[in-house]
Image (spheres, rainbow, N blue to C red):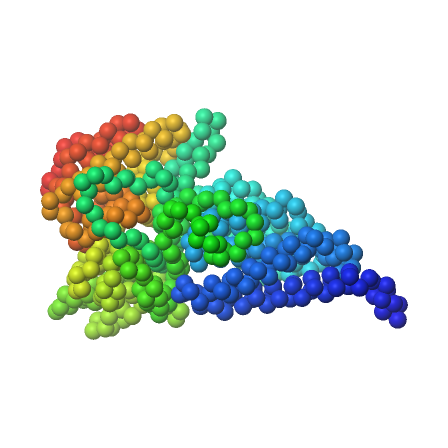
Length: 565
């Protein structure tokens, strides 16, 4: 009776406030939980559902701000519950980034995650004897770390890792839970991820300079008058990571992380308000071209990979390019085949939920059968009906040299070295050297030159010189008389233009380096590039020696042009 009487004392307006809040809270949870049932592929089906979810969370967030006092006294609203709402909004923005590849939404996710920390929304959780609440707090930290990694906010990442470590220690000490090993693994993974870059850029006070490798305004060499290139634009990309033992965090390997940044522009700051993403009028949208849409696939099965590939292929607009990036363990054929078809050279590994796979080279059980858990070059043939740009970073990348262009559409494959000199092999866990060249060519150049740190002033001077090298590579490519037209058809897109110029710089560097002496140490392409006009061009070789001189590492490179490879 007493509680009923107390409830009767609540003014009707305040009771309605609590009822409305409970309705919005339940509706928001229902919609949020429904997000995981949406198909992960296909760019259209999910947008209206995301819009409705953002609508409800916008109302919920504003509602709790406007009625905080009533909710505190009549509902018993706790600070961690406000933190949960903010955390869900952060997750929505992050997932919208994953769906759209629009980096500005990462800034929005960061704003909400950052507010949770600054306002100590989760600070009282540890005082409650509920381990599930502490797990919510730990998951918030892990999600915040992922967003900070993607925004290159490494200083914040280091602070968060320290705080997360303390929280895990307190959690495991108080509750003696079974998930202690898993949370400690999260810490180990993020620590390894932070240390993946092989070279540090230092300020004068020895603090580390955080460099971004997204496409900036001055990133790709500009197209100059007289350069005749295609009008294709990169619209979609599949980024696939399936390397054994490579450092990863939150289903992102180092290679995947580097490649996704190479396919994005620097984020713009959106107005920090709860706009529904994707709902702005076209007049409000930035005038620059959008980022290509991306699917990030960590250790996919063949079925998963093919499903996403088919979805991308189906939705590819006219005059657009599909990029497939494969960072994966090589699968090699066993025995000799009478034919040399697109299924006779092996390929790269796809995940199997049944087989435990050890070692780098995977061998099929029966010599008369092809390896099932493998993406063979022939598997990609149906998708060459549209413009296709393939990058393979694998110990069996050369399997993809054996392509046939059946449909006459533009098709290029950039293929990594299949082996590196022994002095460099121990770095493979921290990401591939080939992908590092495509993401951050100067850092890769420093690494192969034996340098592990550099002052900011010299770094910026070398970056400026590298931009000049890229401009000259663009001239070499577009003025070549014997280059396959496929390269030029892709050269009109600034992302692909930058990847092609970085690839040529990578190949030329390795061919001039004294310890890269075997053919398998060099990248290759399909179709073949004219070497004397590109990767072995005397002007480019001269530039590489001048860059080495700036760094005082000229002794690492061959002075004379070597023709016999």
